[in-house]
Each structure stands twice: as C-alpha cells, then as structure tokens.
Image (tube, rainbow, N blue to C red; front, side):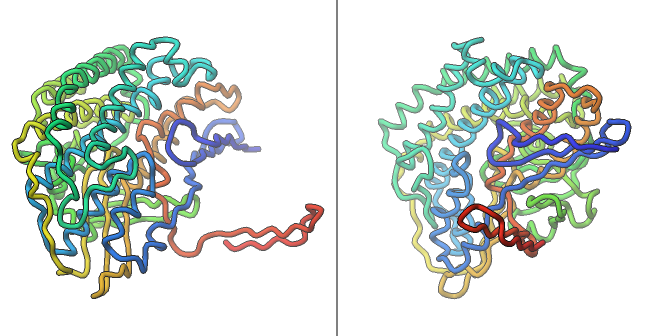
Length: 474
C-alpha cells in the first residue's frame, strides 16, 4: 500500500505551510504537494474603507515586509489622485525601500538559509539554526545582525519606526530627512558594503564547492519576471516589467498598471495560494519566477559599480546562461543586497534628498489605481477600485510569493523525488525539501486569499467535551 510523508510545519519561513509526499507501493515518491494552509482575507475586508487608509492598513499583512506593502499601496493611491510625486519624495520613498531590501535579504541569507548552507543540510537539527551559527562563527552572525539593523535604521529614520512606518502618503511623503540623520547613515555605508562583500565571498566559495548540487537541486525552466531600468538594468522601485523566457529572450515588456492584460491566476483545491501565469501562453506553460533569481535573469546589468562586478562574476559562474537552479536564489539575493546598499548611498548623496518639496495635494482623478514595485521576494501588485467618494469597492493583490507558487510546488516535488527514499527516510532528506521552499524566502501571510467558497468545519461539543455534532462545508 502507498503511504504519505508529512512535513508540518515547514520551518524557517514566514507563515504556515506543510508538505505532503505521496509514496507508491514501492515506497518511492509519486507526487509531492506544497500546501499553503494559511488564509488571510485582506482583499475582502478592505472593501468599504477609504483608499487613503490603505498605506497604513496593508502593511499589517506582514511584519517582515511591511514597507513593501506601504510603498506599493501609496503608489496605487498616487494613480487615484493622478499625480507623480516630486523627485525628492520619490528619492525618500526609494531610500526606505532600500532599507527594506537590505534588512530582509540580510536576515534571510544568514538566519533562514544560513544554517543549511553554512552548517550543512545533514547537520544535527539541534544546531542547524541561528544558535548553531552563533556557536560556529559569532563574528559573522554579529555582522549579519548589524546589516539588518542598518536596513531597519534607514526605515526608522524616515518613518519613525522600523515596522509599520507612517511615512509615505498619497502624493508624496510626510516629513523631510534631517541632514544630521543623513550623515549618520552615510557614515555606515562603507562598513555595510564590506559585510555584504564578505557574505558574497562565502556564497561564491560555497557555490564553487557545490556545483553539482546547484545543477541538480530543483533546476527547471520557467519564465522570469522583473522590473528594469534603463538598458534593462536591475530596478527595484519604479520601471517597466520585463518578462523573459528560458533563453532570456524578451517575451513581454509592459507597464505594471496593465498587469491584468497579461497575468491570470490558476487555482487548485489543495492550497489557498493561487498560481499566476501569462495569459497568452496559458496554464501551466505560462508560469514564471520572480524575486532575486527572476530579476537577475530579466536584467542585463546593474547600475551600481560593485554590484555590477558581482553580477558579471555570477554570470561567469553560471556560464552566461539563464540561471535555473533554485539554490542560486541565495547568491542572487546577496548581489541585490549589495546593490541596495550602494543605491542607498547614491540617494543619500543626492542634494535633493534633503529638500522639503515633498507633497502634492490633489483630489481624486481616477476611480482605480495600480501600484507595482519589487519587494524582496518579487514583483508586488496592489490594485484598488473606488467609488466617487473614495471608498474601496474592490481590491486585488498579487503578492510576490504568489508569483513563485508554481516554482515552489515544483521544487518540492523534484527534490522529494531526488532525495527521499520511503524505505529509509533520513531527516536530511526532509530538510532538503524544506530548503527548496526556503530558497524562495516565501511570505505566506502576505500571499494567500481564497477563490470561491472557503471550506469550513464546525464541531459542537457538550460541557464534558463530547462531540455532539459536526458540520462540514467544502
């Protein structure tokens, strides 16, 4: 008889999920499913709220990436007002976004992925964690903490707090950057760049020693989507979206406001997380990946000097081809981390960053608005429809992690088939399945919503705890 192997919960991710591996009569893997069993109803319960409340409501989706939701929400509100914020306001918003990217990428590499990469997939689970890293290399962990602290300092300096900042408002931002704060942040940049370069040296050494693993670990072809700047340079805050195929040929280039013309969402009964795909290719041929790997595949260059050097080395290591291996996400993430620190310096050194020309007051011009940016985990869409009074009638969110749902599900199954033997189940094999998910740094609280009727089970107990009645709705 066939049997199941269940991994619940999946560890070192944000949110809740489980993996169910189905074994055949020969105890070998037949199928594996990545079940996202967490439901968040943000789209629905935002209906009826005023549009200008959204930059403060939507960051509560997640405490890991609240800045991403804060900024993309206010970009959607800008469209409703029909305004383009002043350049100083855009610089300050982007600076906060760099802080979000730095703190998120740094935390993921060292604290979530680091125990696998630095201690080993087969290490004792008792030490395969942050505490184990501290014991193995306390100086490295200290630097990781300082990197994350610096990213959070950028956020707190602008928004008065590290989590759920109140900074961006429709039409601009609500306070200027003080010159003393600017100088304090600038004084740390070189140190932070040094820390990221140390991390890049670690991942390059690891990649050199694990080429075979990188090539075989959940490596498969998809499309790739990312925001780009001039000459297809890496862009995280504002620009067109570029969709490339497995050979890096450009398939689509479009303004994020037009995303519904290009992207549809498929649903499956075994997960609350939808599966985005490109409409013209259809499901499942039109699936794509986002996030650091997707962005570096969609880009042709990086506009900051040190990150460009690392990007060129990355391309040499990967043979200049489309990078398909799931574990390369960790490498790409650190290159983006370096770019974000360099870009933060460029913004802080821009004379206009201290300007007080920060807000454009306007009235409602459009009855819908779309905001798009590149969150640490990938392309993030907020779409709001309002009535003439500014009250929300409909909300649609495609959150970064949702774009990668197909890839995570496929990675889970490929790794399970490669490493799991039902006749001799090793903990390290189960950890590799989890590691396939962790590489995408999923944020499951952000990304789940329902299609159709939600399943429900109601159990009625008497005072003694005896079940009286059970009602199911599927």
